[in-house]
Image (cartoon, rainbow, N blue to C red; front, side, top):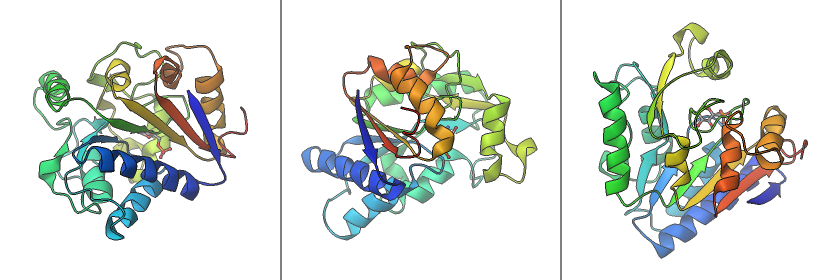
Length: 241
Ligand code: GLP
């Protein structure tokens, strides 16, 4: 695992956007796995700027989602599908056709999970998966104790994660209890994993993931199993390393 310490989140965003751009220059139709939350926004901003400045042609890029809330009405602004379309797909000048994600409003959620696993495999697998990290060490929505071999499935959020994500909703009571997430085993199949963490609130989780033992109690520690994993942290998130 490679750990890169950067002075601030904008520098981290630029570094990862350049890695994505380099991948797209090599493989124009690369499948980029994206994550949500506040942390990755500088990456998407920097990548969109590179597209605007003709540093990279992203017109053949394909984008896929890491996880999704269950039960939000389709088109809800905080459904991760809406977030990824708004923050990634549209700024890159792509259309819905280049995007894939699990259907969190499906009647049969278990079937939607299987469908998404199949779709990822048929797409040839994820080339680069961008990850954030929860304050409890989760990746995607794989909360502590998720099996390290897990596949895309329905999960129940911990109270801590619902509290952490309440800022995107009117209050914690609006945050769904259930989600669909790529499993840890699914995530580990991506060819390159890039985890970005910024801010002191992530320092403890980052230290456990990078320096702690491999453990299902810290889902992000699964990156230790991956042959090509890069962890990009600002100085605050690196402060417990
Ligand atoms: C959610 C997402 C994760 C993300 C995490 C951290 O739980 N499912 O993919 O990494 O939030 O978000 P933030 O970057 O806003 O702290």
